[in-house]
Amino acid sequence: MADKVVLAYSGGLDTSIIIPWLKENYSLEVHAVCGDVGQGAEELAGLEAKAKKTGARSCKVVDQRREFLVDYVWPNLRAMSVYEGRYLLGTSMARPILAKAQVDYAREIGAKYVAHGCTGKGNDQVRFELTYSALAPDLEIIAPWREWSIRSREDAIDYAEARKIPITASRTKIYSRDRNLWHISHEGGALESPANPPPDDVWMLTTNPEKAPDKAQVVTVGYEHGVPVSVDGKQMAPEALVAHLNTLGGRHGVGRIDITENRLVGMKSRGVYETPGGTIVLEGLRTLRSLTLDRDTMRQCEKLMPEYCDLVYTGRWFAPLREALDAFFYKATETVTGSVQVKLYKGTATAISATSPFSLYSETLATFGESAAFDHADSKGFVKLYGLPGMVANSVRRANASKKTVKVKAARPKVGAGKSRA
Image: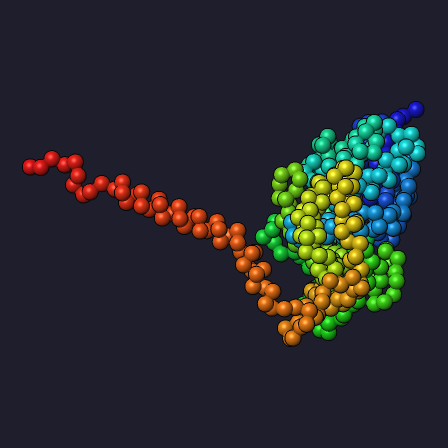
C-alpha cells in the first residue's frame, strides 16, 4: 500500500501539475486539501472533481473564512501591521491557516508527507514549512519546485499540456494570483519589471480611480476592541463585513498598491495588491486609535508593529514571540471602540470624523478659546524643567569648546620660528 501525501491544493497551475508529478516521481497516494479563505465561488467551483480527474485520491475543501478573519486578520489589525509601509499582508496571514488545514487532514487520513507548490524564490515556502514544523514536525515535506526540472511558468504550462491537465493560465496572460477575503495579489508577466506600469487587465477587485464615481461616498465603520463590527450602523459577521467593504472600496478604486518589496530570501520582488476593504478598515482604525490611546501606549504600539509585522511576513505565526505580542496588542486596544466616517473618492479612503465613548480628547483643555481647565501660566515652569537637561548639556559643550580653542591657539607656533637666520 502506497504512503499518503497531503498537497496544499488551489487548482492553479502549480498545484494542478504537482498531483501527477508526485505520483510519477514518488509513487505516493495523493490527497488534496484546499482551505476556503474567501477566494471565491468561481475558483472553488468543481475543485474536488478537478483534483480527482488529475489523479488525486481525494480532495477536501475546508471552510476557514471566519477563522481566517477572527484568528489571523483581526490580530494583525490590532497591531496595525503594514509591511514596508504599504503591504497589508493578505497572503502572509493566509498561509499559516492553510498549512494548518493541511496538517489536520494529514492527521485525519494518516499521511506521512505534506507537499506544497511554493517556489524556491518566494516567501510562501517558509510560511508553509514553519507551520508544518510547529504543528507536525514528524511529517516529511516535499517541495517540487526545489526538485523538478521545471524552471518557469512556461515550462509548467508545457507539462500540463503534455498530460492534458486543465489549467486557466495561458502564455499571454500569465499572472500568478492569490486571492482571499482580505485581498488579491498579482505577480509575474509584465509585472516582473518595475519599469512597466501595471496593465489594465491586472486589476480584478478595483475600478480604475480615473473612472470611479465622481461623487464621493461616506461610509461609517463601527469598531469594538480594535476590530470592525458594523458598517453604516448595521452589525455584520466578519466575512460579510469585509466582503461589503471590498465592494464599496472597489467601486471607488480604493486599495491599489504597487510595491517592490524585500523578500525573506534576499531578493526584491514586484507585487501588485488590491485590498479595498482592508484599506478602509485600517484608515478608520488609525484615526480611532489616535483618539482613544494615550501617548505612551500609542508609541509603544508603533514601536512593536514592525516586529509583529516581520514575524507574520516571514512565516513565524506560531512563534512564541508573536503570541506574546498578541497579548500586548489585545490589551492595548481594549478601549479602541467607536465609529469612524471614511470618505471614498477616486482611489482614496480618508477618515473625516470619529467618535468614541473612550475618547481622550478634551475640548475644554484643547480649545483655543478661554478655558477654566487650563492655566497658561502653568506652562512656564513646565517648559523650563522640560528643557533643563538640554540646557545643561549644551552649557557644558560650549565651555569645553572654548577650552579647546584656547589650547589650540596656545600651541600654534609663531611664523618663522625655528628657522636659522642668514
